[in-house]
Length: 172
Image 1 (cartoon, rainbow, N blue to C red):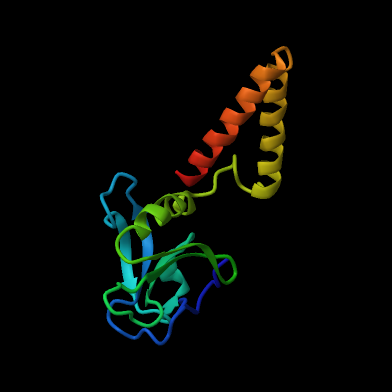
Image 2: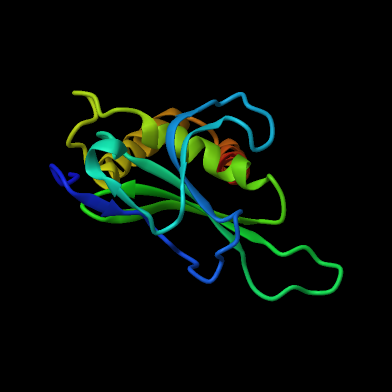
């Protein structure tokens, strides 16, 4: 919960990056269908700025461009660090990406969209870890039930296929 009044200091992951391209965006919207790094909307701030709690709103989600990382190498682009933050009594990292170009947006777009969704009565107070374990157990029981009458060779092929497809879905 944000303080009722007063100032909140924004993250400043890489204070040595004082160039104009290090910034923080207080996200108001992220468009799922946007091309490349477009679609991340909101007000811009300097890293480490102090902002009134009221200006941050009820569910502040920040996108920090912490700037290029490491020393430049001849002919190789430096990787830029991007971090997605949520306020939980302090700034907590949701996700990060290290990228030489706009591909960071492909990694951070979906987590940002999820983070901006308001809590509903359905998901308020739900422990994601506990719910994840429950749902996993349910799915595995359903698979076991469906495979029980099948030949061992069929079960082996199904489990192999699930294994292969899961890796692809995790990456996607």
